[in-house]
Image (cartoon, rainbow, N blue to C red):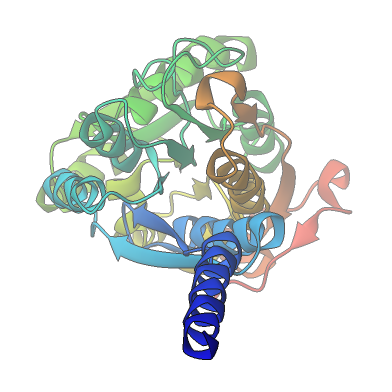
Length: 321
């Protein structure tokens, strides 16, 4: 009888232990991050995302970070891998990466995107207010009007603005169209040259420099990846280059209307945490970040023989090179 009691007691303990393990043991959520290219604004965005999702969800995460090195095929391979491994969430940084993630996810794995200029045109969401898909995130709408005003303030005699853009990047096509529409009220003519791959950038830059007074950057991944080459040629030709965010001043741009990409990433991380907690992406509107402040590179401005006008005397300055 005593042996029977001991066996019964042992069975209760085992069952009890099993119930405790089931209730308290929570497995880590697996998050795959695909960053489209290796340049500072996207890296800042990725770092912000990691901080934001840990802050909002906690440390119980397994994060797999991959870089597509600016190639769409790489992005597709990475996101296919994330989905096949049944990750709980995919974060895609930049438009081409987001499009790959959306296609790979097949509507099953939730996708949170960041640094996507026009998620509707990219086919990621039905609208900013009601995504209607398994995708949502943050959009870095380029502040076109304030960028054009910045150019007018620093280079008042400029009339022709050159733009290099990648023909396959939806975000660049959208921003180019917006730039062309807004330029008229500032009295500018936009001269665009499209490229298909990075190998075409040196020749395209040389051609553009012969036609324009200044060059301005879009949030174009291939072009920004090769920014130093562009600014070196532009400085030799005496043509100022305006950036699309602060980090580009370190590569020789004179000024930029700056969006804080780290903060953009943090907000994306918070949205990612909501998705991990079970909220449907369809119910989370896309957050649009369009506030920007001027940042100047005084050394490069001086090199071009330009003067900082009174309207920009209080602007933030960046050391640059």
